[in-house]
Image (cartoon, rainbow, N blue to C red; front, side):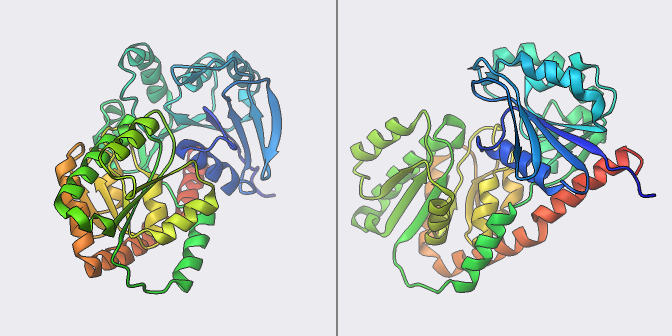
Length: 383
């Protein structure tokens, strides 16, 4: 007789079709391990009545939510559901930070194995953090293991560092669909002689993404290049609180012909822009940016990255002078110089792109991530 399949619950703030970095990773894991284990998902939502749905073979319970306040769903239903059903699961995998998830685990009295996936620190909500910290510390103490992407995420987090012995480094993996898209592109790509440097930014237009630093760097670049600025193009994919301000600034600085705002893009549009671009610009300025999955996507397409030396996993994904350039966070002058270097060194830029693609293949495959996670579950459960 074979061993009984483990029952594993992914617990997080939201889930597909709401897709951000955390939700994409939850979905990757939940769908990728289905079959090896019995995989389930419990998530909240922005607002709405509770419902159940099977998403790509994974049963998902979307808890009733009254709305979101301070980035937190108001969902007593999520706590109720976990309290009622937690005894059914061998492993609960909580994707943090998600204070309601911590509270649900505490009130449910769950006795099984608790695994955390530490996606990022809470950085900006300092007042809320005063309330959340005791609960978060309870969760970190209660956890049987803490999955975390890189050593940089451990060293850069004052919350996780004291629990380093529980940490298991499991880097995020490139989604299989994107790996296949990038492979197809790589096979059909042709060398093009184009004097224009095509820059690409993908992300929410919010403070921690370094949007103001990017705009300041583009202003510096215009001063430096003058009429040659027509040899630079920046495509910005994403929406957010700073969108209108950035558009106004672009017009005011005479960058309207240089910067193209694409807004919210479909996967097909994103794929097209990743194929077109020469360099991904990733100028994040705060520890909220813990890794940057979009770096993997661009690197898989053979594109170098300009990122920042945050004390997180960001500079560990794309390496300075090897697969791109790394600049100090918040330094518009350094970002401008890095963009200028990329423009003036097309041969070296392409070589960096080739190494970037190799790095993703070797270090960041979905298969590696799922194998490590499954191994962790089985080890904790004595299988």
